[in-house]
Length: 294
Image 1 (tube, one colour):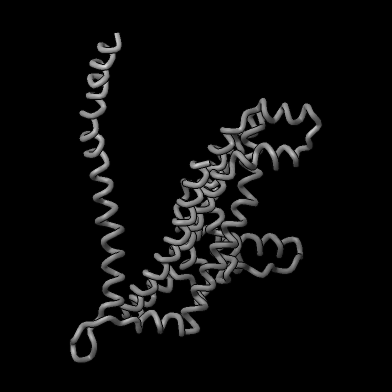
Image 2 (cartoon, rainbow, N blue to C red; image 1 turned 45 degrees about the horizontal axis):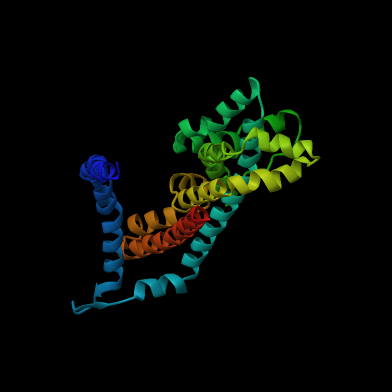
C-alpha cells in the first residue's frame, strides 16, 4: 500500500505542475502593463531629473532641480498643503465611514439598504459633475446663500477656492470605496462573538474596542492606504475647487508643465510625489505582511 501511494503521489502533483505555465501566462499581461505604464515611466523620470546636460551639452549627475524644489518656498508650501489635505481627508473618512459601516453591518431592515445606496452613490458621480454641484451649492451666491438670504440670515463663508474646498470634495468622492472596504472587514466579525460579549455585560464601547476593532484593523489600514494614495495624487477636484496659491501637487505639476513650460521641474515634482506614495505603499505592505505573519 505504501509503494502504491508513493507511486500515485507524482501523478497527483502533475496536474498542478502543468497548470503552472498557464498561471504565469495569465499574470504576464498585467505585469507587463504595470512595468510599461508605471515602473518604466517612473525610472525614466528619475533618470531624466538626475542625469542632465549642462550648458555645454555634457551630461552628468545633477540634483539642481531637487535642490530648487526643497529650497523654493512656494514649492514647499504646495507640498505642505498636499500633505495636510491628505491627512485631514484620511482622518475624516475614517470618522465618517466607520460609523456608517458599523451601522450597515449590524442593522436590519429596509433603512440600511437605502443608507448603503446613498453611501455608494458618489462612486457613480464623475469628479467634474461633483465639482460643479459643489460650486452651485456652496459657492458664492449658491443655493445655500440663496436659502439663507430668503430667511433673512447672513451669507456663509464659502469653502470654495479655499483649502477646505478640495477636502470636502475628496472626502465625498472617497466615501464609497472606504465604506465597502470597511464592510468587507466587518464581515469577519461574527454575530455570536458580539452577542457573547454583550451577554457578559460588555458595553458597546468595549465590544467595539476588544471584539470589533482587532478584527478590522487590517481593513482600516487598507482603506486608509487607498484613500491616502488616491488623495495625494488627485488633480480634478483640487484644480477646480482649491485655491490658486498654495495649490496641491497635482495642479502644481500641470501649471509647471503648461504655463511655465518647465518639463524638468514638473517631472521633479512627479518624482517627489511618487516617492511619498511609495513610502505610504511600503508602510501598507509591511503592515499587511506583519498581520499575515501573526
